[in-house]
Image (tube, rainbow, N blue to C red; front, side, top):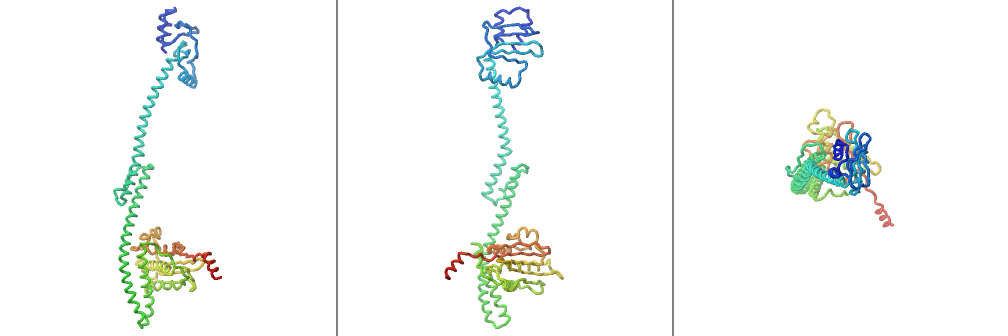
Length: 436
């Protein structure tokens, strides 16, 4: 641009050659070795150094493609510095052109300065952008994550403290959703811990009460033994049942005391006449005639079940007692209401299927959702739900299953399936070998 301006100024002077001194000053001022002005098809050498020079590269600025310009710039930046170049092009929108011969060292130096400035500006922009990104990430990610982890650590140190429950900001992003889930989990865990604490306290209280009750039952057992010697026929008829009931109650209290130390004892399985066991359950229930509750047994008198007698009694008794309580509840009082408990059983191969059915009001949705959960699966007000929990545990101990059966009519039906004990081939072979 400087050389073009100088050429136009010189061209405006009289068409005479410039003095050497003025040519030298012009070339030094423009940083060139020669200046040629092309106008209307003619060329005029305006200034040139004393020593003619050879040209290494020529560049036409009139119409240069972008890729070519980038290639030439990189070539000058990397390999230039000692080359003589010729640059020519039009001046603005006129038909005047200027051609200069110059060294590429000043151009290369200017390119390094420009590259340095671009690098420094890029570093400043990068630092500014990195600072913005850092504070943005810190605000959007790091700070919420620190709050989450801090709440977890505080909650872990004291999970029962309600002040340690995480309080979110109500956003819609993933961290906000995680915060709400953490809050829900912490609240549910606090509820569970409180329930477990209450259960532990309840278990201690029950153990104390049960210990004293066992002593009272032991005394009642000693006194009831004397009823056997009474000559009254009525006393003789119900005395054995009373003794069995007291013996069973003493056994239950002993098991309750041992329950806190371990689970239910392993079943001692024997072949049992199921009909006789159901009759004993019926006697223990002591259904009053005025209650209108009918108890029906649907099984063959010779049906045998491979199970623990006491544990199977507890299973059937718990289910039948729940059915009786449902049928005699205040909401079931009325004329003409069918009140029936049906215990049915049949053997299919090596599995005995038992159903306990009643015509009561059925189980509410809440009880169905927490069917075998203690203190949550009760179908009546004031119940604990322990009966079903105990029944399920005893059935599973026998390798069986218990389930609530959906029925089209009202009422509740449970189905129990108890398989026979698997036969050990090793034991059979050992016995056979011993007999031989």
